[in-house]
Length: 202
Image 1: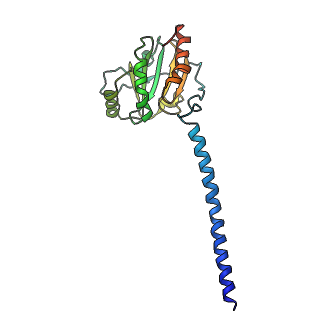
Image 2: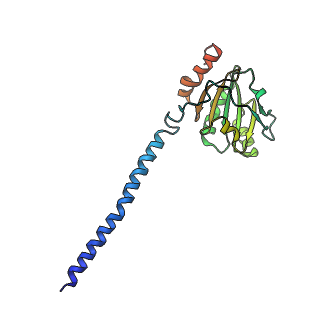
Image 3: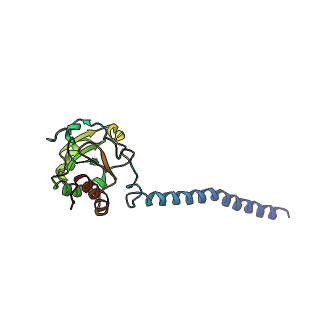
């Protein structure tokens, strides 16, 4: 006579134990969803990451002495490659999908003879970088390879693609994290170039 009530209580304990076990999973899922949304809101689809200020802005650019891209006719990226020129230092890699999206913009910028565009090829294989440039074109006047990421650390690179506008005297004027688009050109790079050149940029 006492067996049936015991079975019922055991079932109830089993169900309640199952519910208790689910609570941490539900809480974790909620936290993960919230964190994911925050990261999404702050990635390249938004402006937050792109607008992270760099401690280097207003200071002299880190020294450049990077080996050339093997198999390319372009010179190595050294201090001489940017000295006395308004220069855009672009950090890219062949494996970086946003770099591929940005490349046509760089080619268009390269048509402005007042802007010297050079590149740091970040943690890439030379043959892949050569294939990337062969397929998409080359906007750069010099390329230096950074196989272990040391130069990127010196420059405070947050994520690639990333670009730095450097004045002819070597001062960093502007930084862009993520690929250039119409808004970042009009509201960021072009005003910085105009200020440096004293002339409008189209």
